Image: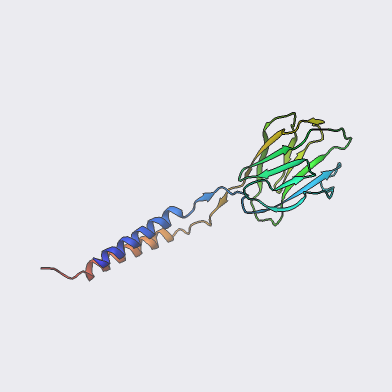
Length: 190
């Protein structure tokens, strides 16, 4: 009876190993460190030090209040930017906004980023590259308090290490050997 229980556990473990090998998982930013930089000027690397910029660990709730104006909340697959007070401005610069970047090179590349919804006249331009999402509000001009922009993004899938070709055979052979041994070890009852 004990040997049968051991064999069942061995088979269950082998089935679990087969089920999890070679799978891929959608990466997410939760728990990762991101940098939020305020950018003002034609050069996307012209970082302007302002309150609320810096490095943040992505968790539940807003990560920062940038420039006392924009509440930024990053989730697993979206960024919600809320304009906390009405503003009206006009700039000649080509970029006025912020970027969200991978600080430690720890998460996969961004593969997509796009504005999915906007309200309160707050409609920023969104662009991205492998390591950054840029949110440019220079064209907004006027935005009402409570205006919100939702930016959805995707990260490259993380694929597990490929399964060596002989591993399923090895696990199957071990299971058969375990069954054979269990059959021989059972004392004859009679």
